[in-house]
Length: 547
Image 1 (cartoon, rainbow, N blue to C red):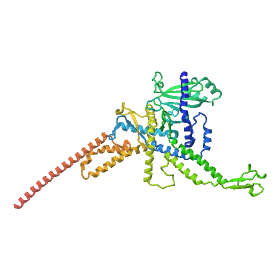
Image 2: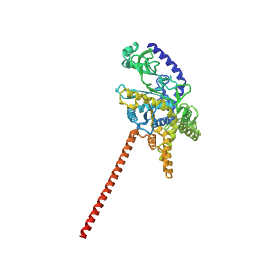
Image 3: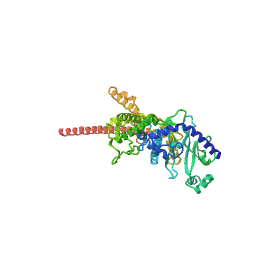
Image 4: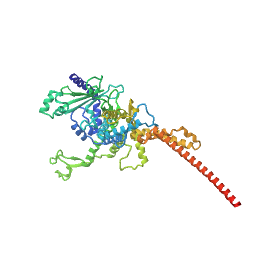
């Protein structure tokens, strides 16, 4: 095992070298786009770096636009107030038919959604999406809350401490090396004294708060081995003491526990670039222009002065300010110079640069609150445009981020026996997750609109020829429009229920028609009897009169 520890530490060096060529660019993106999320790619404390970069930041347009973009992605992809995904068996995609299995899967999705957003997903998701938009990639770790004894727990790992790789043909990330620190005392409590290196044990006794650098490796197993069940899992997990190259713990995962999306994948690399890459030149120029503008404004307010070194007035020590007295031989010893600064050019350039930043970061579609009044139609049009702009990045987020999270959450809940027994129709089937978020629905609304327009056009034609409506399967229309608009499956009847309802309605109609027929026959029979009696009475009356 110690040989494995040394092997992992050696590979970490190679991964660091492969990532180093992109780190300076990512640092600049964080500096202007997400200064409070600045990563330390050198492994040192980032606190001083953040303080220095905040002092050098004069224009916050990029940072503000990044926050708007992240909020739009979260509201459009993973809203906390509505279910944004559903599960569907592979090989079944008949929208006109709702089955009991789909009803059960909807209950499963409701359970997962409640527990995902009942945990810390929203806060950690915000950090991960910020990393993805700014640097181009992020890491979300998903597991069971071991402390609370159940429920999901999410961790947004800083990308500065993560190194990734892929063994798959499709390029999806399935390997991660994460550096982190832990105190010597915490290591003893976490891994046990017998599993820690003797130097760590001694350090814990003498200086328990001393931090030790650790390495966490998660990667696919080449072979499924025998022994403990956690060592036969598809993904291996190794906890290593880097300082001593000592193996602390070996375990495993049923699914890859980290969801690692890339917004824009770099060629011949496992890493990516974010939207901030496009806005970085404008952000740097705007920051420099704002810096010069502030200096010019300070010069305009405070003025530029010329002073004569006459032995009394020392121009090197004199300070201009309110309620200050300057000693000089005469009033001509010091004078203010007019700098002639024109702020109109800088304002024009700044407005153009800030507009370009917002446009590149998709934050220019809706006007600031309290400015331009917009109608509801205009707002809906703008929102639809935003969703169209977010559509390309949504595809990779869906594949590399959301599906990985949902697969992991489903597996954790299933193994914890929290989902109940599935219907027999689902036995032996693979499941896939589809998305019904606002952004996903907006992409499907064209199908709904086309269907509705088709029905309207045929309805007008039906006024001439009623048989033209035979071309429409209205059951399929109801299912397609309901699914496209995100209607819950629980309010939609299954095909069997629809058939039973129609048979019952037809039977009731037939029984009603039969009852009406029987009543009519009885009324006819009663009328005939009445007429016979009336005729008989009439004959008897006539006989009596003749007598």
